Length: 268
Ligand SMILES: [Mg+2]
Image 1 (cartoon, rainbow, N blue to C red):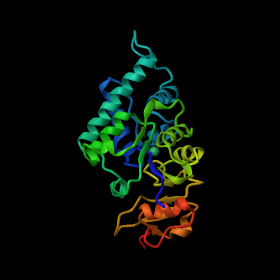
Image 2 (tube, protein in one colour):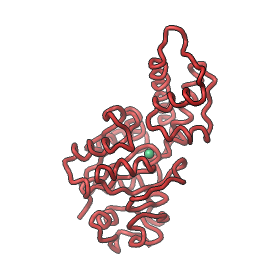
Image 3 (spheres, rainbow, N blue to C red):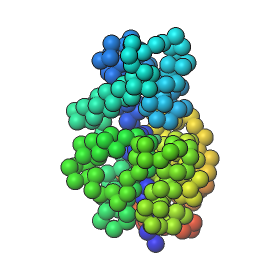
Image 4 (cartoon, helix red, strand yellow):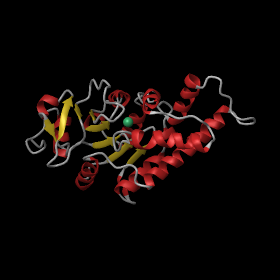
């Protein structure tokens, strides 16, 4: 039986948004605000331990700019919110300009699920505007409508690794969480999905490669394409799936059923 729904994280999972999108966008926002702050790869890797853009700016100020005071008449909250808005605008600009593409296999799997009538959902802490911009510019103007449920940004009170974002998504879909599949690129995301009882497939991204994805059913380098299957890296079902695979509905059905992939599901 096909999975009850596919639920996708956005950043790092649909696209390398952190590496190619968010980090440069933060730097653009700082420059526009006349701040000499510059987040390099190492620093950004450190800040990714904090979920949420506003939270990352706060952490940066606390850790790296302890003496910083906002301009007169502006509270720190306002400044952080303003920077975050500017950063989102810069991110949207990068998306519009085509600086970000979907990771291998993402468009293929989304289209396959749509054709088969498998509901799609988004579970992310990135803003709804970012999600919409990314979907529109990578998949087409109607792509935001492909998703039955989008839980994004500040719609939940606790960000990943809290399971709240997945609990909300599953509830809105009205499905059994154990029959869904979540797609994530980070340990925080795995914890969030598992906390809500949703099996997780992990495609590690630029900044998450060294993380521990304990509990994931499958860890693959990416979702793979026919003729270019992905390397299977780890996961409780890794042995059943084999060394390489294309993550498609047949494979996912096998994973959710706990019986392993059918011969048709795994490209060998
Ligand atoms: Mg992510």
